[in-house]
Image (cartoon, rainbow, N blue to C red; front, side, top):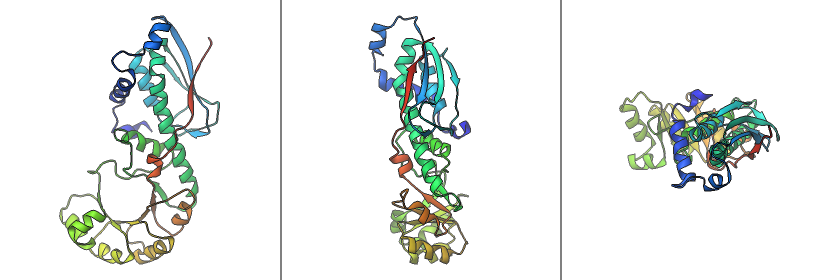
Length: 282
């Protein structure tokens, strides 16, 4: 799973989020209440039923505060946890660990929340052959980590960035004067990238295919329209359905025969998982 973090520099990430929390004066509370050389052993514990994501990012935050931190990882990203399950045990300088606690837990809670919600959508697709995709609807600065969390939850990534693929959307179509002209322009550019085009109506499918589209994104189509879209395409290119997809509707959408369903809310609206840091008496 760590290979999926190729876009993320965890050390730099840790520096940036700690800078936000520590300010210029650092953790004043720990400094005035705890001896400089005091040591602390603590367990990071799940308080929810969740799918874990972000354990290495959390360790990076702790290690930025204490480079000599000892971390015993008891789980791995993608594991399904129950309330009370220990995720890892950390031992190091007490001031450093307490100064890093909130930032490390924020990361772990946020990414595990994404992985958990993603897994719920994936479960709804079981047996359909349809694949859940994420979108670029991510928190600024956290895209690589959030998309990593999607994979931990069993989903797949769409474009990581704008240079990863061509996706012609409604505004591109309007600017070019139509679906067919937009697709032909993209194909003529010979970028070597797959050309995907968003279609809002069934009438746009024929021109898109005639122009050489490699993949279709059926945006905000009804279930009945998706059934017709699948029939028109007849397996010539993959079809992705998108727009307003919920846990209640995703299986019905998948059963129309589309190949992919993309859901923005798995990164945009996932609630944080409940994870805490508990003092361990040695």
